[in-house]
Structures are given as structure tokens and as C-alpha cells.
Length: 229
Image 1 (cartoon, rainbow, N blue to C red):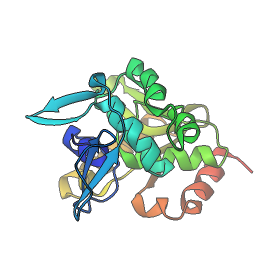
Image 2: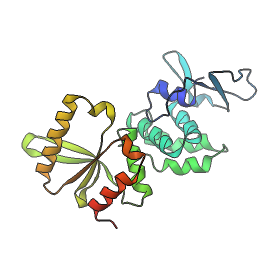
Image 3: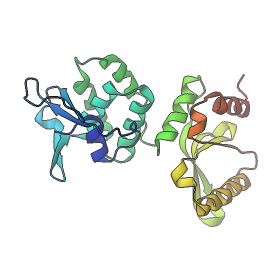
Image 4: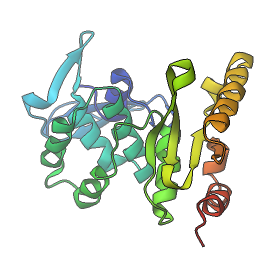
């Protein structure tokens, strides 16, 4: 059956490493399928409860898929996968509690179990997850995800990706695809102007994927805005 990143892509989970074309399969120990160019076989016992079929394709279910990826991926990508599965409704909070059983006795299980505590269904993109982890790793107070700002005059509300409401500081994460069109740029400007009108003392910082490759470009202005030493 499809497993690992192959199963995750079939399920629509985001935050995965770039697709190199390798097909990842799960097979029980002793199965005849062998690794060959373009195919990687993962030998592990997969109980029937951890299997499913999607569009006629057998694959590991979301909980098992996430468990496998927690053991295979670096921390940021692993947490991004969990966040995405939770946000998309592929994984529920009760499902999250079943993942340790899938990890039991496998290499890197203690590390993977610790990463489960970082999962948050409110994260709407892998970029949000990565910026959140950069902030937490620096010892900053945990942000409020999807900080809601009511706009009573227009009978609506706005959400800021990550916020520290008591400090009136927020972060917007600007992924390339959602924010690159002229219409998106116009909407972003209107939205930011409206937020500053609603909260005159608001400091709203904006970061992109490029900033995550150099964490001080995020942390220095954020610490200054929060008044942290």
C-alpha cells in the first residue's frame, strides 16, 4: 500500500518535502516486493485498522501516515504535516491520541512523541507553522493563532495569523501563491490599513518563506515590537 510521503500527497497533506518522484510503499516483513529505482519499500507491520482505500488505491490512513512521517522527517516538516492534517480535518484530536501506539517500539519514537505536543489545528499553512516554531524555539511567549479582530462597522472580522494581543503585535505570513496576484496585493493593503484603523497601536509584521531561512530577520523586529531583551 502507499505510505509515507506518497500516502500524504494522496491525502492532500501539506508541508511535505519536495517530491523527488519516489513511490513509498509499506509492506509487511518478509514480503516479496523489493526496493528498485523509483520505489522505496518500508517494512513494518500495518494493522488493518491503519489501512484505507482512496480512489481505489490502498494506503495507510491519516494517523498511521502522520506517525510514519514523524519518524522520517525533520522536526519542522513533521510538525507542519501534523498541523496540516489537523487543519484539513483528516486527523481529529482523538486520532492524535492514537499516534503514540503507531510509534511504539520504532526508531526515533521518543523524539516523535515529543513533537506531537507541538501540533495545532489552527495553523493554516506550513509557513505559519515554521514561523511559530522559530518563535517558540527562541523562548518567546506562545502566540495566539488566528487572532480575531472584530470590525463592527462592517459586520465582519479579520484574522491575524499569529498574534500577541496584550502587546498589540501580530505576524502575517505571506506565502507566494496566495499573495502574488495584483488582486491579492490590493486586498492585503486594504486589510492592513483597516486593521491599523481598528487597532491604532497595532504593530503588524509580515514575513515570507525567505525570512524563515534566516530566523534573526523574524526574531529581531518581533522582539523589538514585544519589548523583549
